[in-house]
Length: 268
Image (cartoon, rainbow, N blue to C red):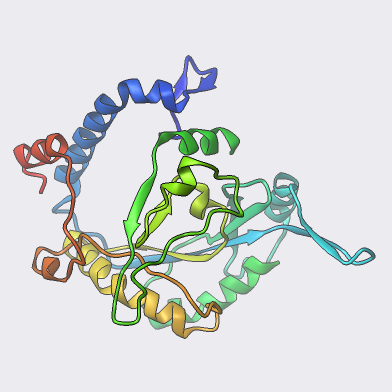
């Protein structure tokens, strides 16, 4: 929805989008169906993947001993694009969500081969050298994801929003046992190391999704990159492989109209 404009002049507001939202969703479902039937039997040359490293730009004021974010990502990107890393695992630099962020990705994806995996560290070492969207997301809707619970999870966890700009009903509407997501900045302004994978085919993609879903939170917490002593994981309502549905933490909610369209077009 971020790309919707009116007469090429301005972004649509959330209220304007609401009037045509059902048709947009239906068109998106039909577009997905077309792509699904086109690619469902395709097989690529093998697993490809790449790391995406996001950076926050900061200004260090040593005299006053303060740190502030720097909004000079555009200027920095121009300089980074002109740098010559002797063509050794060069990185490609690009914009990220906020003006104080940049992102690096490898020029070419990695594979599962030993030589390719050995080049990852060098590539990462070289890497080290939108208000309209936010306002639309803020006004659109709030999603609440159930917290994954085990024997060590407290039942009455409730988010404390008193220190934020939320007031009145939004604070009262914070529901225990859920993670509140109401805009893209819930994750868009957080820098991280991400990995994008391209599987060989649809079946491999589903298997990778289902295998990594429980493994990634465990590996994250076991690594030195995760320093928090208390955290919460969201629940999983839909594993991709049909035979893994028994592992869903809760029921999967569907839109009857969209689901019916997918069934009629043999896309599920």
